[in-house]
Amino acid sequence: MIRDSAVCDIRKFTDEMLTWVRGRGKILIVVHDNPDPDCLASAMALRHLFVMRVNRGATIAFSGMIGRSENLAMAKELEIPLTPMGIIDLKEFQVICMLDTQPGTGNNSLPPGVKVDILIDHHPVREASVGCRWMDIRDDYGVTATIVYEYLLAQDVTISTKLATALFYAIKSETQDLGREANRPDRDAYVKLFPLTNKKLLYEITHPKLPVEYFLTMDRALEQTRVYGPVLVTNLAKVSFPEIVAEMADFFLRLEGVEVVLAMGHYNREMILSIRTIRQDVNAGSLIRRIVEGRGLAGGHGMMAGGKIDDVDYSPEAILGVQEFLTDRLLSELRMPDMEAKKLPEMIVANHAFS
Image 1 (tube, one colour):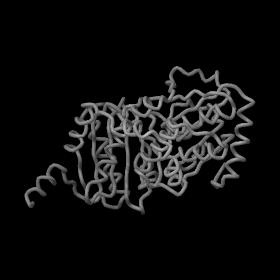
Image 2 (tube, helix red, strand yellow):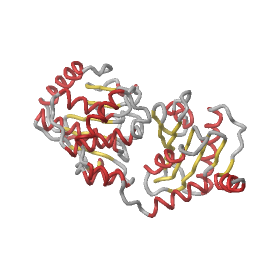
Image 3 (tube, one colour):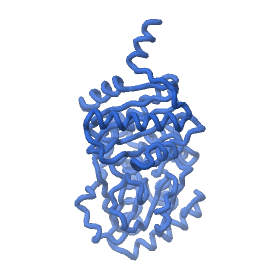
Image 4 (cartoon, helix red, strand yellow):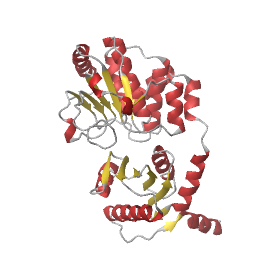
């Protein structure tokens, strides 16, 4: 396992890993469900490393969907080859890689019992990950893509314009332009990659056209938002794609006075959850795991985390029940169980009355 980002250690690790891969057959790269820019760029970069140093391609597999417009534009404009996990025959592959997720986390669709050979991630290590042959987990990094970028540098691999654009956008979006959980390697990669990017493609990715459903969801979120002092809870009800839950969590964290956001949305009999915080004394990953304990799966790190609760009926009663359960646990964990809720529309009206 690599903990030190020194180039000599990375070179040694990647040399040994590539030698091991070279003596085997087909390669599969598994990313988390409903992939985001970080895992898309990381997979693209790792695949490029295998092509350039092992002379062998790799299949990138995902489950769920890519619904967020920016992520769709990224996959399309940068021509990232993706294969649905459902049509993959695992017996055809002799090397299994996993990026930006870990075995047993519940946010990837690799069947239980399938051994992961190469694991690269920036989230805290899970117990099930310890058995991986090649494990590089750096939970002090803000982005998995930065780790794989360092592999390319250590191996003196040329980075194409499209790959540079993918890696840069992954760091940009995951850290919100270095403002969230970015450490020095992330910052260095961001600065070095920017001159190599295709600025027109970057614009197309960051300014895509948005579907009508996006604005309908935002309208619904504004109506359903409840504010408990510095804590905001929003229920999007039924969503057309899972990523919008995290997007709304980021959006509402910008509200004046808000320090912690819990967003939720119903998708395919699951309640998708996302937590965002600016508080230094709150670890979002630990917080969400305590909130869903006994009901679902979750993970994350300092300022951002996600999770899900399975088998939730799409009915007003069921959705409201989950919202109340999660809100009660959240407020209890934050030691403010008696805080009264304010509706966001009412707060807007009150503010206008005094303006």
